[in-house]
Image: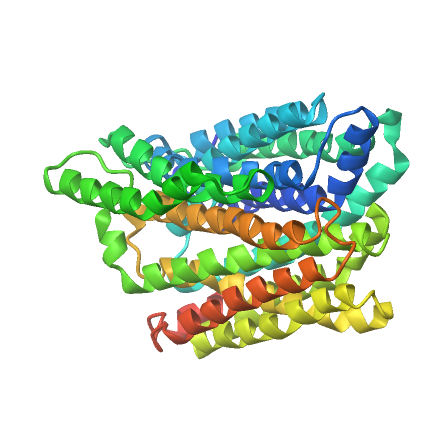
Length: 486
């Protein structure tokens, strides 16, 4: 039976930690496989007389991020109220079922709906990962533990595109691209079994209530930001879309003011308003938002353009991702872990500079017609190192001064901004990529150059935010404790 957190040994905490990592594998494998499989989906649906153009392709990716982002705040709060173990198991169950629905989709519309269901389930599952880690370990210990996210995440990132390419090429039982979703079933079942056995029961904070008003208010504001952007690429920006987009900042402000009023009167809140006053949390969350937009858009365009513009197969596309994923492992598993506590913000500053150089070089290589694969490999390796060294430290930096009682809410906010950043990236960068060249998007260089320009602007903002971080992030730790976490 699962233990309470106070009664857990170091070994039991490690088993719980590695159980939580299965959720990370589900997320990463799903995202990387999707990018590789999109052209195969378009070909398959076209053969059936169904259109899966650039707009629908964006919705397959962005629909997941939209649902994920809209419900993550609620998912984090549910973990605080009912326990991370229960919500983790519920989220993994829903994610596994939604993956089966994706694999059985009979039209682009049903596939998009299933992807939205995946995102909703992931919104319940994902916040529990960081919430439980936040409770299990102190701020400096989390740096070492989260380094495992780089190692496992890098391996999953390498496996995802390769596995997707192999599954599509093998066409097992005539499933084609459908197998890239169905592969989530054994992973999900393994996560359920491990979660039931190893996760601690008591991670809830009793006596709270669900903030339905806040959930609806922030959900409406976030939807107003994203829906017009994703819709605009294929349907254009009409007066209604522009009005909704323009109203989104006002809706967000109204949701925030309502939250503050409810907190003052003792009402339920979806997250404690004092998180907004935490400068370190606020800045790191902003970095995560902008970085996620740039990185998700980069990976989306990179995988699609390799196939649509240069004629790479899904398997070749997966293999090309290996240097990038190896760089992520180096950045998260080694550089971030080793230097973040000592160098602080300069780790993230250097990572942002590396991304500015490497992302532009990698996409520029495709725009130039792919002049020799050896020229691409160093750019991808550097891009991966930059991604791992920036994204890995972002979470421990954001949570460094957050009260453990607010772990679920803080984790929900962080995951929300990451997913909303991903949806923004697909909407903004995908629109720049597709709009200038039509559904094929890679028939000419203009779309690539527009995508590069948007990515570089976002990464520049990310660099400026990293420079604004305080010099001292983590509290000094006694040498005896520090040696135990090495």
